Length: 354
Ligand code: SF4
Image 1 (cartoon, protein in one colour):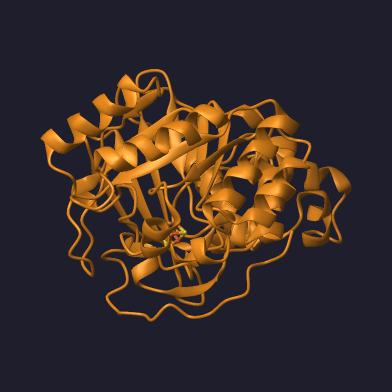
Image 2 (spheres, rainbow, N blue to C red):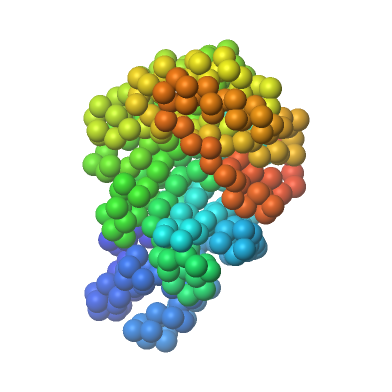
C-alpha cells in the first residue's frame, strides 16, 4: 500500500527497479493523484499490477452526494474493518475537504455522533493523507458541478480529535504541506482543547489555522458538554490559544455548536464575548445537527438570532455557518451516525503525546 510508506522511501516498494520509478510513483501519489493504478501511465504494466487494488489503504464502501452534487461523503473501509469518513464540499471558488484523524473518538462530547459511538483506533498518516489524495483524484476526474477541479482547503474536522493523535497527524500535515505543497494557511486543525497538542502545534514550522471548539464559556457547562474540559479547563485552553496567536501571529478561530436551551443563552453569549475579544477570534456558529443517541436539538431560529445579535452587540466577529450535507449525515458532528450501527462505549485511550 504505497500511501502507507513514507514518501521519501517509496523505492522500497520497487527494490529491483531504477530509482526514477519511485520518483514516478511519488508524482502519482503526491502531485497528480489518480483513482486507479491503471492511470499511472508511465509505469510499466507489471508495476501497475503490483500496486493494483492496494493503491488505497481502504476500500470505498459508499459515496453519497447532497446539495445538488456539490457535497460528497465517502465512507472508506480499512482492512481491519474500521470506517474512515471524509466529506468534500464544493463552492464556486473553492473546494474544502473535511478529513478524519481517528476511527471514532474517545473524548465523548455529548452532542457528537462520533463521540457517542466510541473509539476504535488512531488513523495512520497514510490513511489520513490518502483521504486528501482520493478527493484530489476525484476532483480531477469526476469533479463537482460548478466548482474548481482541485482541492483548495483541508479541515481536520471529521471523525476524531486530531491533537489526540498528534504524531500521526503531524506526519499527515507534513505530507500535505511539504510533500504535496498545499499552502499551510489553507489547512485548519480543529481541537476541543487538547492543550499539550495546541502548544506543540505552535512550535511546528507551519502556519496552519487552529480552530478551537469551545461550545460553552464557563467550566461547569463546558465540562457537561465536552468531558475533556475537566482535564484541560477553559482558562488553560484559552491560554494555549493565546500562545498559538502569539507565536504564529495567526488568530485562532472559535467554533460553537448551538444546542437548544443549553448553550444558546444570552448569558453564554456574554461570557463568550470577552474570551473572543482577548483572543481577537472570529466565532463560527453552527446549529447542532441532531444525532441518534442524544436528545439534544438544534437551537430554534429565534434563539440563534438572539445569540448572534448579542455577540454582534458586544462587538464579537461572528458568522452563522450553514449546514452542508445534513441529509447524508455529513454535517458537523454527524459522521459515523449511520456507518457503524453498534453502540460503543467510549473506551479510555491515551492521548498520543506530541
Ligand atoms: S466533537 Fe470532536 S473531540 Fe468531541 S467527541 Fe466529537 S470528534 Fe471527538
